[in-house]
Length: 464
Image 1: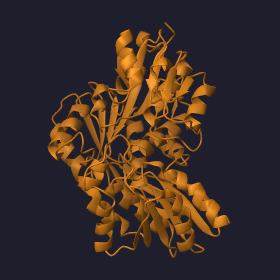
Image 2 (image 1 turned 30 degrees about the vertical axis):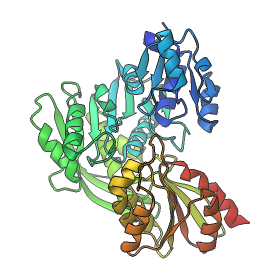
Image 3 (image 1 turned 90 degrees about the vertical axis):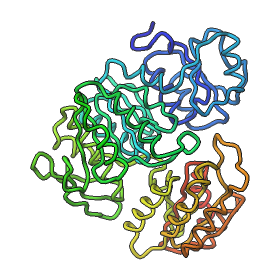
Image 4 (image 1 turned 60 degrees about the vertical axis):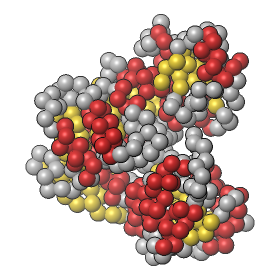
């Protein structure tokens, strides 16, 4: 067995290896010396990055892609039972491993920080990975997005810290046993898996219950769901709870957040002392994510002053208010926001950074179930923009739901007084935006689907 690789993962085959979570685990395994293979539905920069690490990547799904000597097949909850490679695995009696179990096995023996919450996981995990790397602690990390600096979503480090994004969507975050866990917020989402807030709370309680004895929970003191979770877990004797935020009662209290264009200056009170540092991305929510990262690092024994300075070196994650370029005096920025809370936060951040400019949004709803439950709130969030273009729903892993279309969002947005245009063919968007945009405007492409591909196209159209 190769050093640092569980036997079952020596020759893994990943179905959907190009996904953010799957590719990260595959990269770490390849860096540890495993013989990694997998398949994905299409070519991508991620597929090329994996091949550069020696990973075999097949395009398309076929039974023949699964090698006879595969030690396991790694899947996410999005992989359907009739996938031909999964069917072939059953025929060959190859073990099937959920990606969360694979990730948990990579954390074994290391001091793990698991970052959970309905929103902000990728950013907060990334801030920690960048800061700890900047302090020469050489962490391993697995993130749901590519860092702007290293340009990757995962790495195997030589240090004893592992930072991981903990996904609540399918309850798979119950697999981890972190020394420090962060809970940024607790809201109802992932409606195909959770029917109520009670189910959400139960799931997060189970996650907190997996923190190792003597470990620490870092949790928001501001967000209502997080406050309720804190009330529910306060009595766990083996757990240290550290709250952060703007609430007067917070253990790590935010004294002031000062916007400075596309950055913020944050002052916190920690152990009775004031500490000021820079966050190099705009928006109050990102500043609070940085404070959560600071509190988690301190819980591992890292000096606060050193960590705060290192957090300032974080410059962002792809798709999290990422500047794609400028043409004809119009800046195009990309946002992964797809839940109403995230949408409103990013739109308010852009408002704060773009005083005097118009804000135009290209929004692609993500999932029929989410649109069915939260379409009205999405429409209300779009009222924060000067004008919006709304695309058809990106289905991802879901089948259509009768009567659930983007019209749910558009109608709510118009009721809220928003200027909204429906565009059914994404190929028409660049021309539509070029006809709307004026010198000095900001254009925000927003959503968790392939709306991100439109940014460069919009820039090309504005340049022509």
